[in-house]
Amino acid sequence: MKEKLTIIKVGGKIVEEADTLERLLDNFSNVRGYKLLVHGGGRSATKVAAQLGIESQMVNGRRITDAQTLKVVTMVYGGLVNKSIVAGLQSKGVDAVGLTGADMNVILSEKRPVKDIDYGFVGDVKQVNAEVLVSLIGKGVVPVMAPLTHDGRGNILNTNADTIAGETAKALADAFDVTLVYCFEKKGVLSDEADDDSIIPVLTPELFRQYVDRQVIQGGMIPKLENAFSAVDAGVMQVVITSADAIDGTKGTIIKNA
Image 1 (cartoon, rainbow, N blue to C red):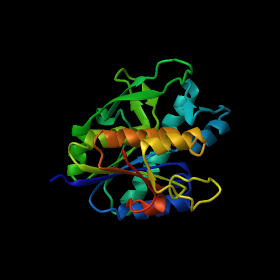
Image 2: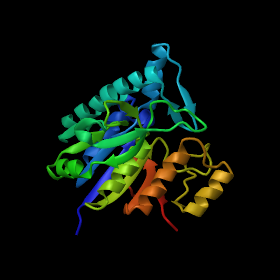
Image 3: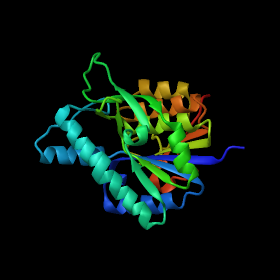
Image 4: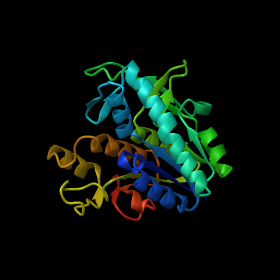
């Protein structure tokens, strides 16, 4: 019987504001068993870029990453945000290690080819080094993964944190019974953005398409859910979209195949 592993992805203001970060650290430290944390940090990157006079461009929830923006996200994601989380977890008694995809060759990507949109230095995941992560987790170390990967030729690539969480969950599904929890500011996927209690309890592929067609689900939530369905298809035990106060996966929106 495989051990349980909880992979939690957090982003937005949760990791970028002191009060919500502190609550997250408390809740995460109380998650039992093996665990892994994937974080974003886009708002901080946008803020730092603006302070440096660099304009941030987004298309369908994805950041356009030119050479100057790549420097900003590398500093913010791999440095400021990642190490703040690691230091906070250590203070809670959680032995954590911060990783980008380049560290220990954990995640190898390729630069996204230019089609309708040139996303710049953005990486599409090719391979997750499950062996390295299994070894760390088995030793009681909690990986804290920043949304940065590498191409194996010395280049860092900005990579969507939801994608990293999903691909990591799929890679580890052979070794663990994986529950993937996507956390953000809301209690789940909402049918009405103005009503925080309008949680959609279950989403199937058919329901997802209907909500997208009606523009109930839009923007950055679309790639998040696409990653969730892909993870379930690949053997992840379950995927939950919820708030950071419910990272045990008992509340929120559950993603199912049918």
